[in-house]
Every structure is written in structure tokens, then in C-alpha cells.
Image (tube, rainbow over all chains, first blue to last red; front, top):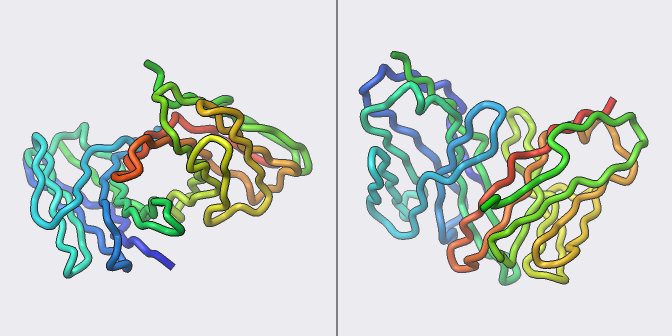
Length: 113
Length: 113
């Protein structure tokens, strides 16, 4: 059974701080890794994808992947109250020739003004 | 450009009633998915369709059926609703098998009394 684990939080940070969200996964052959943001009562929205070891930056967001340690993280710089949401980690793996996503249960982030 | 459209947005059913959740995408994507999201459980895959004409079971298929009507549309049917099917249902689609980036609809909030 493929598993993706996240701390449910809430993770509380003050406005302007760096928020660090972490995710571990159980399957060594996973290929693609995603971070989705989900506001309360809304649908998941893709904010970052990463496919190889190292860092990937997009604006205030940085995704970090370490396949040897089986973890992926998301850093949010200069956190804003509008970043308050649940962040879902998703890992893609191949089964019978088709890729599926397995989601973590999400980490709730609260950014206080 | 609507992306992924789900109908209805809200629905209340009595135990034993049937209904069909509709999903349509206008991104010319090959693959479509149905998930349910429950508190503390994350997103769980119910059924998926890798391409037009094919459907397969996901993690939690019991009590559901699906139809891939054409490339655009993928419906989810509850034949005899049960209170355990009270959940938020999301449809998603993806067009890039190599990366499996999935885009989500707004969701259907279903209550079964």
C-alpha cells in the first residue's frame, strides 16, 4: 500500500515568516511529486510540481525533493494571511502502466497578521 | 475556459435513493478521475478512466459505478445511497501521462440521510 504522510497541523506562522511543510512517502519508485493548496470549502489547486532531486523555486514557493530519504517539502517565503489553507502532498506512482496519485491528508497552515 | 465542471454542487439524498454526479472537462484530457474527500482521510480514488472507453477501480469503488460517456464526460453513479457515502466528491482530469498533473473540479457536497 502506497502511503503519503503529512503532519496535520495546524502549523502557525506569523506574517512574513517562512512556512515549512513536510511530506514523507513509502514507495521508492514514485516518479512525480506535487503540492496542492486547498482553501476551506474549495477544491485542490496545484501550486508546485517536482520530478527530480533538489530544489524548484516558483515565486515565494520552493519545493524540495530527496528521493533517497523519501521526503518532499514545501517552503513558503514571506508568508501572507492569504496563504492560510490546507496543503496536500501528492505522489504519483505507476501501476499496471497507468499513473495514479496518492494524497496525504494535508497540513493546515495558519498565517497570522 | 471552464476547465473541469461538476454538477450538482450540493445534493441531499435519503438512504436508498440513487443519483448521478456529472463531470465534464474542456481541456481535451485523456484521463479522468473521481475522488471522495472525508475529514482526516484525505482524497481517495474511487474510479478512474485512463482514456475514452476504459474505466478501472480505484481504492474505494464499492457502492459506485462510472461511465466514460465520451472524451469530455465522466459520470459517477450511486445506485443505492448509504450514509457512509456522505462526502465531498471531486472529479479531476489529466492530459500528460508522463507527469500526471491533475486538475480538479469544484466538487459536489453530498449528504445521505
